[in-house]
Image 1 (spheres, rainbow, N blue to C red):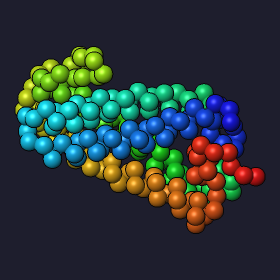
Image 2: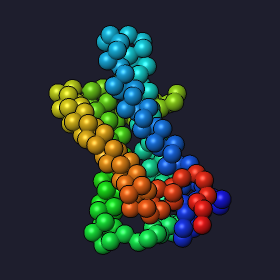
Image 3: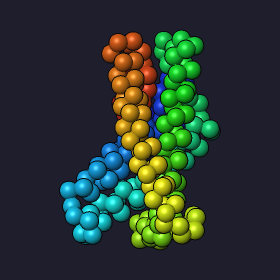
Image 4: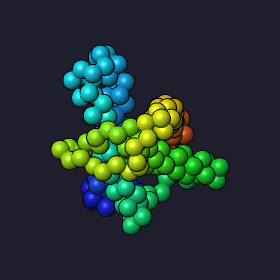
Length: 184
């Protein structure tokens, strides 16, 4: 399989980035949800939060790479083609996912910046994006949590749509992104 996309299948690079992002998103959500099992101020709780921050920023980097690849490569066609309404819905769903995956890490960075916290990234300390303002940081944190909750629904919708296309509509939407070559 070529690393580049073709008219019928995503290339190995796009596929690897997609599935790596799936794993990262699982760990991003698991790390922030898992922190509640540890008391505030403990090293394990802080480790879970730091993991959430760092992996969230890694998602941001990968989504930027993914968008770049989309801009310079062909997007494989779905066979049989989607209806106009389904195609529009798919575009809106993907746009929403991309906005979410770009905005949430930046929003999280704003939260840490406003609260005067260190922004860790695999041994580096990233600069604050906005000035220290703890009350504003609390507001931003509430928004980040609320919007983050919608991420569960977006991701579930994306996964269910892939399964519906595969098992009910019997098109190749899902198989185009699987790491195995589809049968002709």
